[in-house]
Length: 132
Ligand code: CO
Picture 1 (tube, helix red, strand yellow):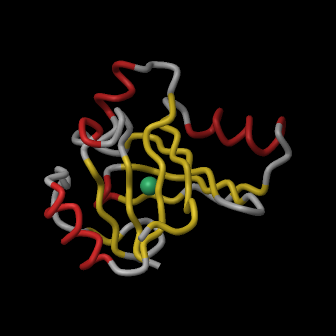
Picture 2 (spheres, rainbow, N blue to C red):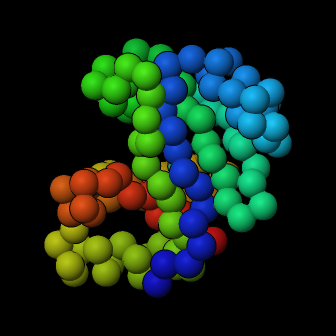
């Protein structure tokens, strides 16, 4: 069911500083910042040859990463994203197995359908699925 690692997302308190680290210090291929109000984040993509890193900064009052940053003020790995070929099948499988899916599928940062799985069911890690 799962395919490639689509991205690793790092919550950061300061997107400019985070971008500088990945661009100027690490020499990465870094996108312009993009505001995604429906997800409550501003994001910068670091394009790697085999995957991406997403640097996420809270946007707005109800950002889903605000609580995480309160607990991890310097930032930290927030989730990673695995590709699935069929979201309906993936959702059915998660429901059959009793895994908690956090909300209905949404359109993610790449215009594809995404879901999030509760960390309590995934070895303490927030896991995102993105349909390819
Ligand atoms: Co993600």
